[in-house]
Image (cartoon, rainbow, N blue to C red):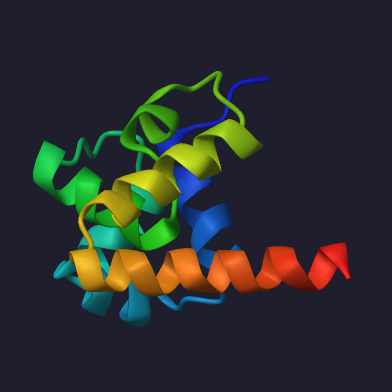
Length: 108
């Protein structure tokens, strides 16, 4: 099954509960530009815009551009680790502490 860029953008935007206005704010884009990406197959975003949209939606640019790719756990992990790698050392340590804490709760 093929899924267009626009359909993927709309699906993940709605899944996150974002309006076009909210996604525009998060990606430093205009609402009308995002609407066109979702509704007109002729629009081709720049790499910079596509990266911002992918990050805001928690997916990868590869996933958005591949008409045959489906959202899966591996894609979500890759998007998470890209965001994680950009955090400060202090923030990474806080997340590691949270994961450690959650793991400890499960073993009790």
